[in-house]
Image 1: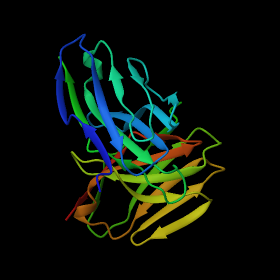
Image 2: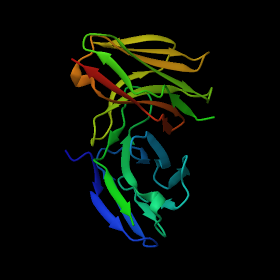
Image 3: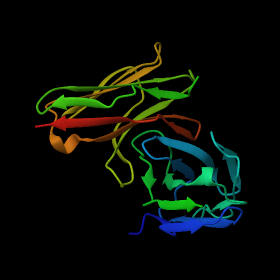
Image 4: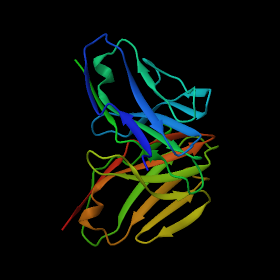
Length: 114
Length: 109
């Protein structure tokens, strides 16, 4: 029972490089989310999706892009990495964000941009 | 104004005391409210959810919701050192789930 799988776990990027953070879930959840968490801070919503083919911006979308071509996958793309994007990134999914349907989180990707 | 705001903390309470965590939100259309706990270096985990005004109790945890005041709180009774963590308030509306900045709770023996 895999749940939400994020890869990679750690990554160091140089300024200006690009990368894709992978996220996949095997629970047939409609809702998927990308958050970033800076040290000592809460989670900031980057992008979210309410179903395949539908994505929407969160609080801090600048510098990121997403796609949702399938129910299972929700990759996050960083273009032209900047030091301000150094953070821990969490992918999460839920059947619906209400009722007793909690968010299932991945284990996070720790990204450093130098 | 931040969408979800928590009391800044950190909060330190003695073992056995009641810990009180507070959260306010700005969107009156918010539908669902959650408290997550996050241990250092780990992913958040859900501890309470609440959708209607009033109190909801689960073991040592009680969530309180007042939609008129746009206020959500979490009470932890008989606090234990294992409750030491960051507590995150989250608010949902039509699929968008927004978190507060978190409150660090330390329970000292």
